[in-house]
Image (cartoon, rainbow, N blue to C red; front, side, top):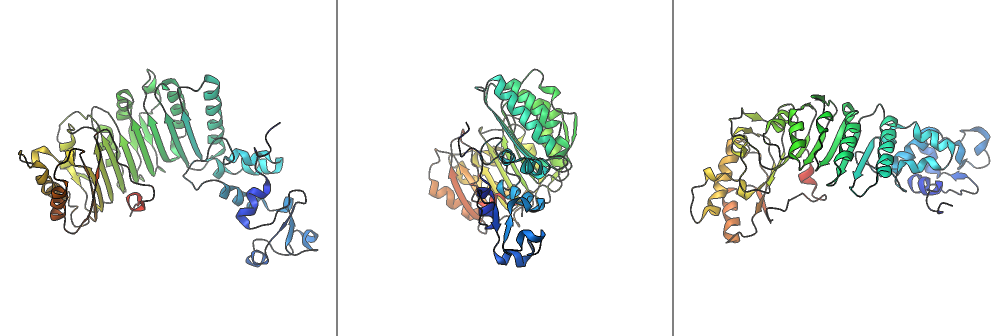
Length: 399
C-alpha cells in the first residue's frame, strides 16, 4: 500500500492558494464573501448548490478554469522546471481522481518545464523510464514554448545522446535551455541539426567539457533572433560557434563566457551588441588564444555590469615589469573605452588571483582608474568559477 502522504490531499492544494476551508470527507468549499464579491464565483452560480449557504460550494462543482489556475500555482514559476516525480510534480495532481487527471492532462502549461538529470549509476530501466516520462511531457506541452534542462555526469555518453536527440526534436519550441554536456559519443554528430532555427529562444546555457561536443556545436548554424541571455563554456578549437550565435542575437542583454583553449588568432569583424547590459568573462587559464581578437572586435555601448578575471587583461597591453598588477586597471579602462562602454558602465567586479600581493594597493589602483564605477573584488583560484548569487538580482537583470 502506498504511504498516506504520497499523493496530495485536495485541501493541501486548494486551501493555501484560495484561502478556502476544505473538508475532504464533506467536500464543501466555503468561499470568503470578499471573493464572491470579486466575481470569482457568483452567489447564484450552480443553482441550488449554494442556496443554503451563499459561501459554500461542492468541490466537484468548481469550474475547470479555476482548477486549471490552482494547478498552475501548485508548480514553481515558469521557466523553473518541476521535478518529474514527487509531491511537487504535476504528475501528482493526476492521481486524485479521473476528473482532475483529465483537467491536468489537457493543460499544456503544467508540462512545459522538463528537467532531465542523468547519472552514470542509473541502470538501463531507470533511464528508459525517465526518457519515457520526458517524451510524454513534451507531447502534453504542445503547442506551448518549453523550458528544458539536461544534466549529465561523466560516463553518460549514450544516455546523453538519447536525451539530447529527444529534446532537439522539439527545438522549435525551446524558450529556455540549460545543458551540461560533459561527454562525447561516436554518434553525437547525429543529434544536432545543421541549421537550428529557434525563434522563441530567450535564454541559452551550454556547458561543455568535450571537444567532440563542441565541434558538432560549431558546425551547427543556430539562429535565435530573440536570444537575450547566453552562457557558454566551450572547449572548442575555434570561436565560430560563439560568433555565429552572437551575430544572430541583436537583442542580447546578458553574456557570460567561460573561455577555454580557443584556437585561431584571425582578425574578427567588429561585433556590435548594442543592447548588452551584463558581461562576465572568466577562464581557468591565464592565456586564451583568440581572446585578443575577440576583445578587439567588441562594441558595447550600453554595458552596465562587467566582471572579468584579472589575468585576462591583455599582456600585450601591459608593459612587463615587477608592478604589472598596478598597470592592469589602466589597461582595462582603455579596453572599455575601445568598447565604447565607459559612459554606461556602473558596476565592475574583478576576480583577483589567490597569490595577489599588495591587494590594498591594487584595489586602490582600480578605484583611481574607475572613479565613477561601483567596484568590488573577489579572490579565486584558476580552477574556481565565480557565479553571481541568486539573490543578487542586478547581475541577472536584463535592464
